[in-house]
Image (cartoon, rainbow, N blue to C red; front, side, top):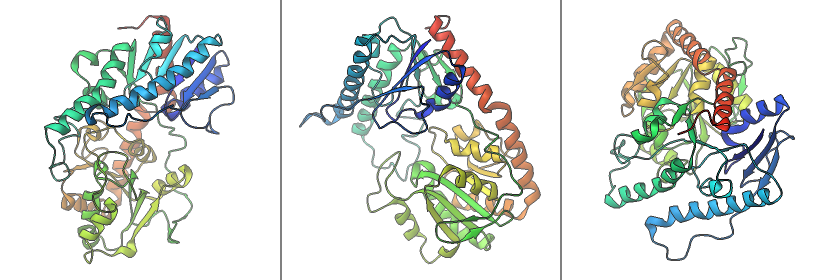
Length: 414
């Protein structure tokens, strides 16, 4: 078969599917993306990079600026796709992440080719991330809601164009309008449970600041792509004074970029890290709090194998891979009692859940697990068993490949 994979940051979520298709040796695979070719992309994959030819129109209405940005990217992607068509390439299936607009016009080039869209999240004004945090989102107006409505224009157009869709979790599917949910399969990309696994003999890890940590130490880990309220950095940092009172020997290791945001608003003054650390200044011991910035994957796994308690907090938003990787390693997890976390953690069985907005409850739960290592180990064992049952890489890959075959053949369509 001929496959076309489209992702602004190619290969994105498609890497393991590409590898599986290449291993089968029976397919022609083409990728489209905006960046340079990543070294990890298999050599058998033909990759074509495209770039936008223009920016936003000067003076464009603010409410349509994002839509225009997506159209600009869609035009650039479609131009590259049309060039492929002119050279004789016709896919049997297009797999595309439509989040940045790239997939908008692909069906106008190949009207008869099935389109399988990766649907990540549908923005809603109530009940999910947008109105979740009253402290951080207090200044929202009808214009903010109007902007959110316009944000869904690209998503709705792509839903209409797609022959079928896929998303990683039931929670993510639940964010979409009910009339579209029946056209969205739930299949996670899968966790490599052989790499992300417990290791009682894990070597000590030297942190960037020179501190060495070892398995058996009271190490508490917290991971964000970037430290930001969407992933609970404010609740976690505010919990540090109480946590250090309850567990003064604990070492806290915080992984993630310290500037900017991946989701939500930029900090109005400096970085979110600086803002919330200033709030607790003089009430915690900074010598036992270690910021690493981003870690390479192997040291990241090593850190989780050392971790005594792992904390994961999130708005009702896309679930991070880091939580499932921590569970796969057998970490004792304290998570936020929010919908995406409840989907994978059962409170008191595979982890502990606390109020997202309660630093005190978070500190108490973490300290309890640091003090009761047998309970922590039991929670971690159940967590790993859950990942092995529901999120193991090969079964997830098989389901993705099966879905792709069904959509390509026309056996599954709206």
